[in-house]
Length: 201
Image (cartoon, rainbow, N blue to C red; front, side, top):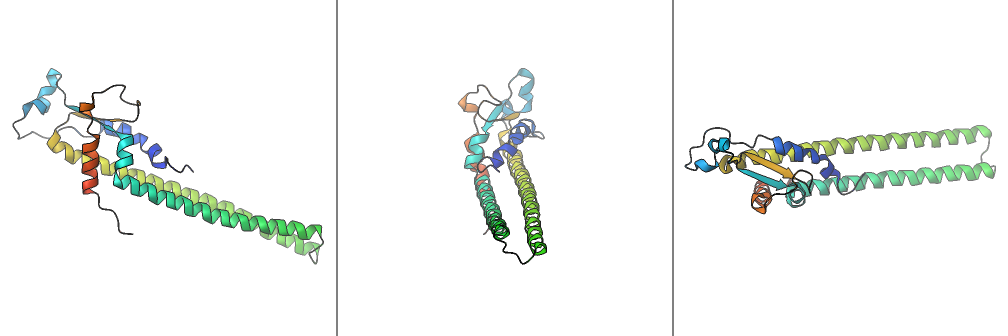
């Protein structure tokens, strides 16, 4: 399990989704600013902006809180599994030592202890799989919540901004070049953080 980029990988899909999300003006504008409405589109005067996904994810408080929560969850899982693995390893070494020194009262008793250790090993492997599945499920849920949060904000944001197209960018993945004037990352981050209320711990 990667420590740092667990949300980022899941959100690469967000970069694509944002490019095609419903961020266009939905309905007729009642303001007196025709140069930024859809009416200008046939002449090639599209109103376009982009968001730097890397910056957004590193500055959006909701994302930072999700990251912190998942890192804590991962640490707890690792600690739990490591403690059980150490105990299992100690039991296995003790069994081996007793076998070498004829420490069991009978062959049957040695086999019973061996079976107990093997069962513990299987249980640990199953627990590891269960915790891994639970972690992946939580990660997927967080990715969906984060994507929905950003998409929902952009729909509201665009009601007043009237962009025809809002692109996403991660490094040079989607945009090879764009003027900085088209970058609305800070506006989006500030808006997202303004409406985010952290859950009480």
